[in-house]
Image (cartoon, rainbow, N blue to C red):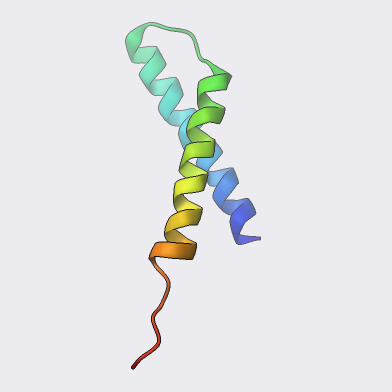
Length: 59
């Protein structure tokens, strides 16, 4: 469930970022760019949570 919420939030936040940046640049909204950024955010969040930020047992 945690991964699903990560993907949903990544999509919503990337849609907001792509919309704002494309509006400032004078371009139209591009859903393909939104999906690409969302996939990137999702993969980075999953890699950070599962690999890098693991709790290490006390030695």
